[in-house]
Length: 465
Image (cartoon, rainbow, N blue to C red; front, side, top):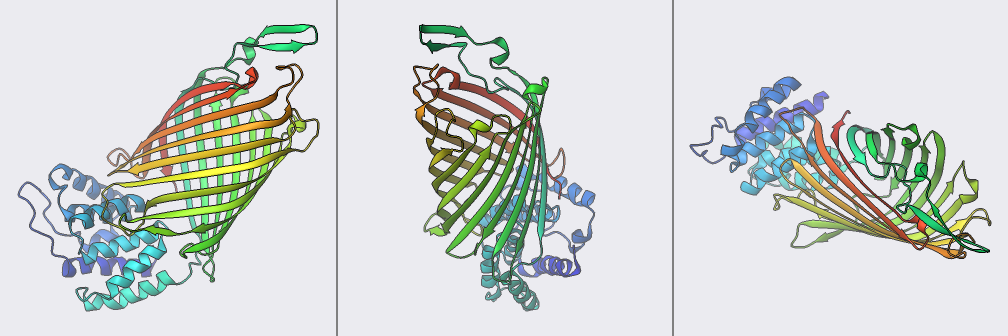
């Protein structure tokens, strides 16, 4: 924490006493002081955690007090948990919307989670209020100027997650026990070899994610993301390693509309062999549409995608994809405080053609269509998400003379992901527990491509930096 930030936080803490007069606490609430003392800003992390635990022990008695949520929000922010701090401060403002000190804390939390537009608007409104102490006005104006200026400093974030679970189909094998070959002299029913059938078993998943975000003087934003994902299983043949690198350029994140561009690289190793390498480029235009009366914000998007895929162990499957994409993502606008729980949803459509790099590829070219839908809702310290997708693929020509008399392959793939996450502050700091379930069902007119599987995992994730 630099001196400027420390001075600013000290000024806010001092302003709380002068600018806030919370209502008299109920007799059953043991919260003794209306505000945190200024020296809490210099406290160690262990002391901050202890204060937070002592405060949360009063939750049952003090849930209806704005001061309880305001103090909890400040402590969470000092512990680096800005997203959780926002929820606590929103609860405080729901109970008492006109708290200048809490509004200042809220503006800082908004900036910390990467929403400078809402923070700037809030600081601007506060700078015009007459009930904010005059001594705080110059600091407000200075912070407003800094929030309005393009960000130059690079912001980093590193996350790590680990989970244990079980999967009913570790090798993504066909669900049928056998299939029929169409031979010149007649059909032949063959049983699927035991080694090629679905392998259930336990798995250990680990994910390391890194993100770097920085702005330019022109108001543009660059985001670099990297992810390494591994799955360890009892049999090395079903273990995998996946690495992804994504770079995104945003023309003007706070504007009513903007252009975006993205470049992504991906590499997957399965069972010790390089399975797939891909490169994807996308360009899109996005709009920012507030929803009156809801306090929400929707971001429609439309664009083009290009992708090349290479299969080192089976180069005949290589292909080039080109298609259209459209999406809309909606959620409560940061800065809006009339919803104690926050819901969000998104919908995405993709339509395109996959062209075979090798004219001998089974099925040749193919048409693809996909719809994805996601929903999430956040509560006090819990988050529930659900994601569903349905993808269809149809080949332009027959897949193989040995399968259904060289019929063209048609597949329809359904995937469902459910996750419940919670932040047990009393167990460990800065971490989150989660449990996730995945269901996959792929149907096809060709038996070898009908697949199903279920998986259940539970584990923890942390923000390391």
